[in-house]
Image (tube, rainbow, N blue to C red):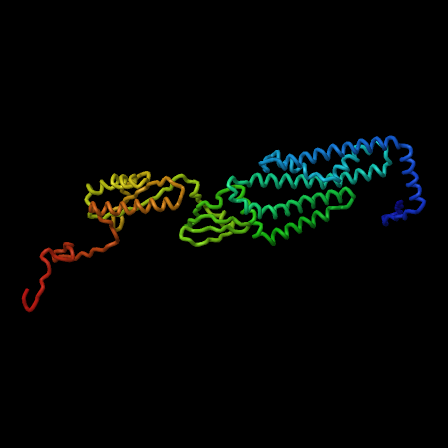
Length: 392
């Protein structure tokens, strides 16, 4: 095909290929085949050997990846990636390596180079996809498979996104090698990606939050966590929301983004739980009796299997003298901790009742003024004068 550019800036004129052109090119091809038959045969043999060697390595990598017990080890990921090598890429590698030895015409060399470039670009995209997905799975793997369901759901979407991005880049590179101006295409894809991102901002936000939970592992399914004033057990981590079961039995559904924006306390990873009791005694408690409280509660806590931390007077309340008790329960199980707090609380109540300690509760006492201005109790020391049937 011949092009003639006219004077000025007008478009190029493309002349049609005539029968004579086809005959001339076929004649040149036949001349090349006849003059370089030996070189072509040797190149074909070498190319076939290269292809068979590469195919053997590809098959060996597939077998190695299949036999690996740990599918997410680095060696297994590399082997699985190599096993995804396509046959057309192996063929183009072999042809590209031997095409120069056969002294092929320029047109054939250019065609082989172009096809090799196309095959290489898309093959690299396939390798990159497998490595990225393999590393994501490796990073997100948990030993007890607690996040496997969420990971499986997320991986389908991640695979789609990674595939679209990589093959879009590969297509742009191929078009650029064809001489197509891809500047407008890149700008259009960028604007389209921004529009899609803004439209699905909430969905992508929760999806990335789910991936953050899978990768960073602040908590897992079955663990008990606390946030705000809520304590709950994680039942499921979805792509958009998490489902938790509160200690009172209610199911709590909260978006992943909202959950991660809070301060989360993971109680499951504690080997102990700390509990604090406020104990208020009446002001009529003698000081020498109040001094017995810390040692008394220490004995009760240790008898119930807890670890005593501290106990002492902390302040004067509106209706009580206040003591604060801190103790630990050596368990990560919330039910065991709850039962131990129950036993210790009732033991304190029983012991204080037996010892004659009185718990304070809000009360009010009214005083009256005597004739001389002194404040007296509501009942004068002499009592009331009551008249019954005219008698005092």
